[in-house]
Amino acid sequence: MSTTVSELKAKGVPFVNNEPSKVTYLNHENTVASWLLTLDHKRIGVMYLISMTFMFLLGGIFAGIIRAELITPKGDMLSSDFYNKTFTAHGVIMVFFVLIPAVPASLGNFIMPLMLGAKDVAFPRLNLMSWYLYVIGAVFTLLAMLLGGVDTGWTFYTPLSSTYSNGNVMVVAAGLFILGFSSILTGLNFIVTIHRMRAPGLTWFRLPLFVWALYATSIIQLLGTPVIAITLSLLGLERVLGVGIFDPRLGGDPILFQHLFWFYSHPAVYIMILPPLGVASELVTTFSRKPIFGYQMIAGSSLAIAIFSFIVWAHHMFTSGISPYAAMFFSLLTFSVAIPSGIKVFTWLGTMWRGSIVNDSPMWFAYGFIGLFTIGGLTGLFLSTLGTDIHLHDTYFVVAHFHYVMVGGAIVGLMGGLHFWWPKMFGRMYNEPLAKLSAFFVFAGFNLTFFPQFLLGYLGMPRRYHEYPAEMQVMNVFSTAGALVLGLGYIMPMIYLTYAAFWGPKASKNPWGATTLDWTATDSPPTPHNFEGQPVVTEEPYHYKSTENKEHALAH
Image (cartoon, rainbow, N blue to C red; front, side, top):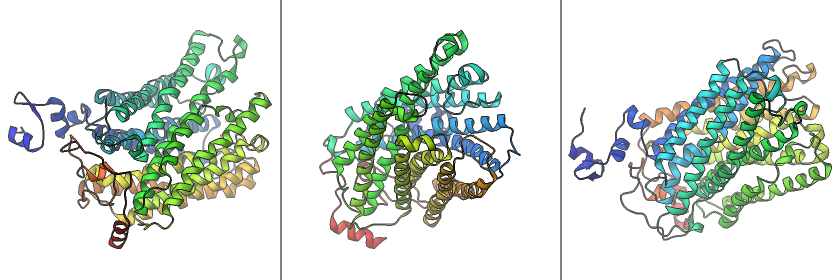
């Protein structure tokens, strides 16, 4: 069905020589081709969200298989080899295709240009290319799973990955190598956009804290991702050409692989967690109806975390035989990371103190995020201490700590951000009681799943084992039961948010009473060109007034 010139002009499509602009025209159409060829950052963000949801479901299925196996002490459901491939598939999919791109690629792509008052990102075509690279990398990785899987764990430690594992390792490595370019292009795009495309008056210290978090994340993506690409390339050289880089039989050093891998993979932890930290800052100040406490401290702590992330990698290697003096140095540095992380938690609490708190569902997810992130951070101190790490290394204590920080942080932060910005993204509201019930299930199910694993790790249960002593069964049953509750908490939003996107009640322009440009200067959902005119920023960030606080609190 053709669209007339008058209809296109009514939609706001610009015309050049009496012909509609091709790029903007595609962004106004609603066909499969228009989505796959779009240069609109908002549509690209939605495509990332759909792709990552698929990968999240797939990774969740593997997690469910793992928890089902661990109900009983004996490995009576899966063979040892298949169990190895299952937890490897779970780790690879969740870490590289869900946790790392979760918030920056989806919410960051959609929201950041709106927060800056920009029409789009700096390089729209690179933005679309980054999504295609993500999909191609996912196809390679899933192909390896279909061809028989990989049994190395998501860390691909040598010499297992370089010598003894099957050839599917290189198929996964190719997928991750391609995926790395997606991450690099996204980081480059965000940095240039933040530097060059801010609205008039939007100075550095008027930027929303979510933008600061994305900026720090982009620095890590640009500097850290090439290291994992080099590491995977060296692995390929050794495996295919027999060059002795990591294999000690050929004069190589397997510890070198660990240094290279963790030099990227520990900063990657902060690629996962920094954007949700930015989301939490937006949620806390919006629903406290109060200017953020310590704005410059939070912004600076995001950059400090990015810097620290590159100098603490060897705390993953305390038991690998590195020098005890180097281990003491890295232990001290790791403790120092707690300072900028603690700044964020205390400033959030300071913001909520005596605020007119509105307990809408996004704030419920913020509460859960703060609680889970704090537990994850505090338990990291045990793994930063040389004496306790020797006992806890490679036990379920590490699994629990990692999930509290990464999943309790990245995924709960993503869910809070989705509930906050869903009315902006789709112009429709969701079922608020169901959203609060989901937040409760996620928080309760998460703690029931992973807190028993701290106790299992303390008692000495190794990770990656599918058989364990019978006296540890009760804790594993609790953990599996919690996984069912947690899964319900994840599935519920997929249903009611999808329903809301098409049939939910229409949202107002600014249903939460927020103050950033994404809420105040554009409609819900935004037009393809974002703004009718160029927004101008004249006030400090988060300029809530006391009368507004009381009125908004009474309205809820």
